[in-house]
Image 1 (cartoon, one colour):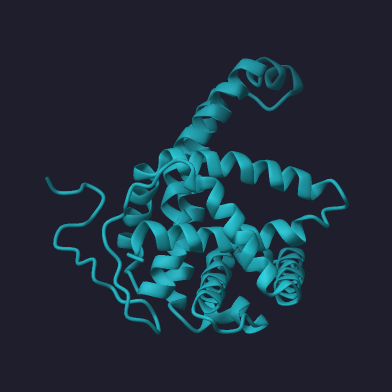
Image 2 (cartoon, helix red, strand yellow; image 1 turned 180 degrees about the vertical axis):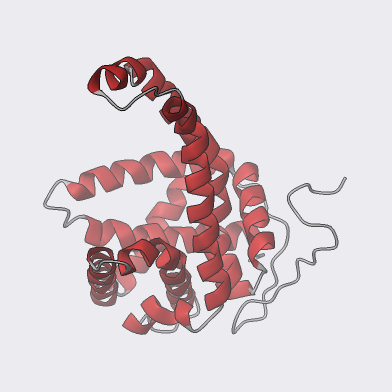
Length: 253
């Protein structure tokens, strides 16, 4: 039976950038691997604490700078996955025994830039569509812009329903962009095929990814408590763990 998430005639023999490993249809892994991805991601961080901290700090400064500059801040979201792709190459360098450098943060601008930028455009466009579908009906029913009408329309029940609907609509997007940067920048998989392959990989690993997501969410919460300084550790673990899970799911050991 043909996999519905892989376009017809799609070949899954894309080679790793700088390597000889080929990707395949995603494997299903045990749920316990979700925790292992995090612990192994921490090991990547420990291998080069100083560079990971520098990469995280510079990345935060760059993103803050982009989002505070008028006009440019509108395009900030388009570059999200360009930076993510670069960090995937950085984690791959560590895996291959090569040094992580600050240059890896910007490596996505040199490798598969168009596809990574396109991934950001797809994510933004789909997000806008999801918000319009979830909340658009509420706005269309608004007879006139006044406080009484707003209070009548935006009740707790309607807001809760629209929020849940939006999250449901965004779930395919989350799955589609999760592994796509690595597939694009490392294996040179075309944009939409990478999105479909990422969705397929997430569906086949729903249990480990759920466990992984719950623990990771807790780490992000803890990381924000001491003036967000903990995020300097959590963010490297986050990106390294994505690379680790991508390798286990799509590449034979």
